[in-house]
Length: 132
Length: 148
Image (tube, each protein chain N blue to C red):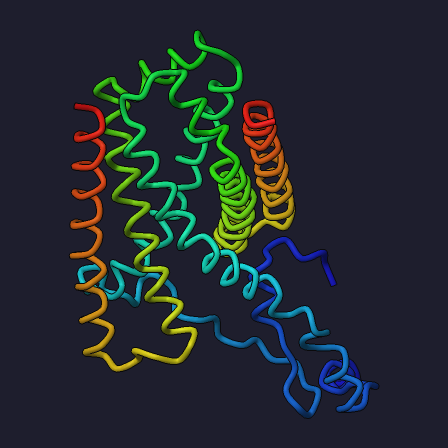
């Protein structure tokens, strides 16, 4: 009886409970960054899709010349950074939704972030090697 | 209290405003949705096409890294991209990318507070499907003109 009573009460005040919950001004950051990157990727993706289509059948020299043009290189770097940011954020949410074991969730998210950072750095280095 | 094994417990366990513990119900899961309903099918398709695009990004990395590495490495990319399997993969990726992009615009409109009427969600859903088909075909027409 005494234990049951203890389970149903708390030493914390209602204000104390509320203070321990909810956003500490970072609660919407992940969600908001997904929206920001998606808006930035909208024109970049259309540009990249149309550029990639018109590069179909281009030779090695033509492709490298296209990548190396200053504006193309800048837009490619922006596309790479934003794409992998958006991808890592999106796959993180998928893992959070479906992984029930805490270690699978944390391990999966860290692995995805590591892969995304490495792939982004590799593609950025490739663009810079061609353009600079 | 044992260490939590299943993270779903964290979202189930809560306290009422008087402090008493309560196991709250979770949000409805897949079994309550009719997947033949267009809105549900488009919703999960948005996630699936996003995941597919994540994998497809590796092609862009390969393309850029091979271009930086030299003509031999680039010839490998060109061989794959013009093979039957490569073209099939690229075509699927084009469709997935356009769907994810156009449905993403639909999501941004929802985020801004527009289009929540049931008939609007169906109408914008049809626009996304038609737009995906048109944009995918136009992208490939452009590619074949450039190639030819």
